[in-house]
Image (tube, rainbow, N blue to C red):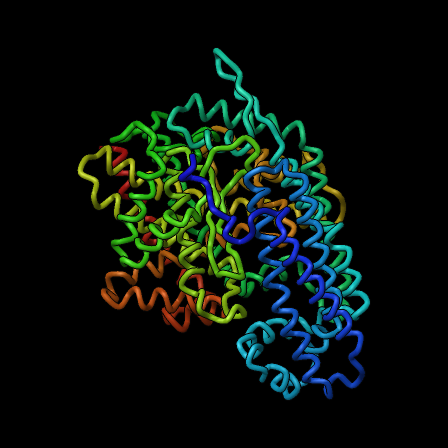
Length: 597
């Protein structure tokens, strides 16, 4: 357990330490000064370029410290959601960040709307020159700007309003208890542990764990429905206010943060639906190996029922498998995994108050990544660890770049993570000697195909249907269940014995306050990474250089421009996506043959 605990004390000894308080006080003084400097600005602002430059540079410096403290507190709360003092300090940091963003509204609004000549002067500052792409993006939002007063008010109330709902979901899920009702006993565990058990090789364990999660969320379904309705209602109301000159759609914010166009999203989803019958062969082949005609909902995350190794793999063994696989691409990737483990930058323990899920985060000051998950030894856990280490590697190869050029969108964030998972699966499959080994190692890929080509599009359709209804009125918990059922039927068809109708409540992504429609970028990253991965043999020894250049460009151009630059392809056309889907279809066909052999 000690080896599976992360070291975050390299940032601060504790959130009660003098070091943490000193940093908070320093940041507070920076924000105080920013507020004074903004109030001191006088019209015309075009004549005060140096003052604006000073404010923007100070804000960037303060934001690094605020992000650092926020990450540190989030790390503590992810491990133990019951830490009320950490939660209180996190709210203080959030309030300070909100104060700074409120103070910056007049400056941000001015820079969004000023002339190109004035913008050029502002960005001539050595510490601002690298943010030219970010400002070009922000200036595209000029038609949807509100007045300084309105923007300030919106920023002020978003922390106790919009984001408070996301915090509530995290608090609820972190404190939730699930009753595992086995035939001979009942155990009470945290939600994260119950979720990890849905990946068990034993069907009886999966069924008990899945049922316990369903029951736990059913008790809280009205709270979950209230959270989703509040988040969507807030976003709809904000969009109405911003539609004073041009109408903005509820998808526009997500597309903006994903750095893709509506044409790209529609091309990708249409390519997926055109292939839905082929994609459904993945869960059907999985069911066949389980001795079933179709999958039960608790089987979607199961390990392979046919395995060369029935035992769970230790944490060290899982890390070793990932290191060995990453070495096939480049020694730098393998060495990176070793460094992450040696420095204890991975949190993998099983703990009662630990939050559900897995993520990669990082400390802005030191430019150091951290990986969070609950590791219980399944193949799915090893894949998840490889996925998150891929994210960490992405940020690591960008650590020497200006911070303004490292803010990549989620669509492109998934490139490195899914590339890493694919690399793990392919290397293990190449090494497999027996049918049992081939099935065991191919299983994760086929499970991934079902997830990215069926489950993620179903999530998108559910969320879109929900937002359409929420524009008119509040949507009840029963209606949310019905919308989930309809979306799952559209994509999974007859491949499941029953749909996971409570998925709207159990899936954290729908309750995230920072951004809506969090899910489709996973399918984007999956298919794009397949396209990148396919270049390995073609480019040979030059591949790693190309791959790293792609990762380094993810924070300084749109997804369309990135793909055009490095792969010479147009992602606004379904043909691009269909080529990646064809690669996956071949993997599914090979798996079907294994299932029948």
